Length: 494
Image 1 (cartoon, rainbow, N blue to C red):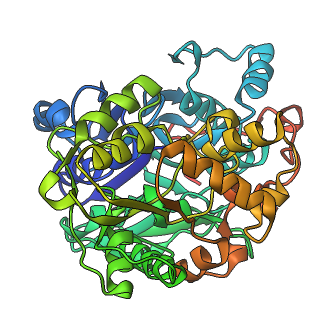
Image 2: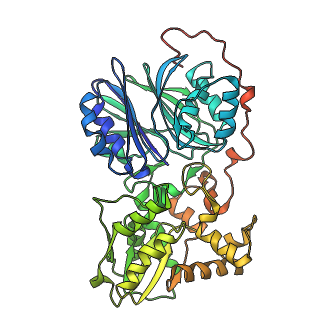
Image 3: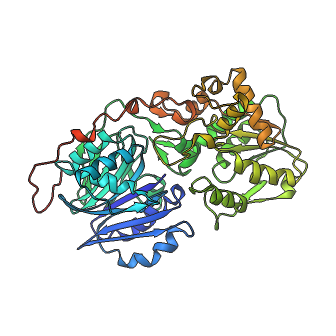
């Protein structure tokens, strides 16, 4: 998972780019990168796994000379990529995942295309995207053809002399929004990045839409894909920042609604305290408290200055360390109380079991009732860097233990009215060691967001793939002809 931000200003863009990119720090832990274009390209990338974006890039700020730039907080690869292409030089930042990257890379290597960026002994996905774009007759054509050959998703920002190209993936899984203020235009993954920089949202890019943002405004290069929008529901439940809006719907409000709907299910328990797992579970807990009329208290507090999200680091060891160290229990709030603990989700279950629930029991909790704001996760995400192994998931571990083997068809376990579903919940309840466990239903989660279900991606819960991604990629890489069009010395601009 990554976050991208771009800005074009009539004057210098460095400060807006610096802070706008930093406001995406909740989306990645591996690398941060910026590229600025003035008289020349200036590009800088730093590892973030042991520090924050601001501290790593603060000294670079004075060298960012130019009126247009892009930035990225990356969960995997080093980016932005620089490519001195047939269209002229450009820098590229991406957000998404390419499931068939090995196949695409092999095809390009066979044609004689070289790759210079290697991340963890694999191809750098952003460089692969750049090389695919370079096959088009124009930049717009290259982006469109790239969309046609990848399996997964890719939203991107491309910086060149003409401005910043912004393209949202064909499924609409990863949002991109355009903002404006008096002397600048910007594009962001998170609208929360706009608020303190005085940008106002003027446009949500449609799925598949490509625009060019320059000093004069926004020019559409390709219209969006009509009738297709499968935005990631998990943005509202967990990954998105509370102050951000996606499709015009605020994440904090959705989380409060999720909590209210969880409370409406609970007619059979009586508790003393309602709480949320910091930080992303807090709004779910507040909604639960508002609906149940029970006091909201903080038995666990997060040491925010030192630790970020425990979900985003790629290694289990790092995730466990962050989970252990970031939450501090308050015994005086916990001891002797029956507690509802609202959580955004249960992914692997290990952190909740070993570092959250244990702290509450150790401090003398009387009862613990865990309420995740979404259904059991059943499938690794196909559209962004998230849980990559189906065997990690708590629900799958339960099913494997119940059945004695892995199941391909888990439909009985995704239907909360079946005996199999109840068996699975009972298993997870025992495994994490709580009094009761009750998940949000798909219908209530969709209701909390407020979009039609067909416009929301729920693949990780249901295994149902968005319409736009069913089957293989529509275009084989061999079908993309090497461009023969002459490119001017100024480079293509459309």
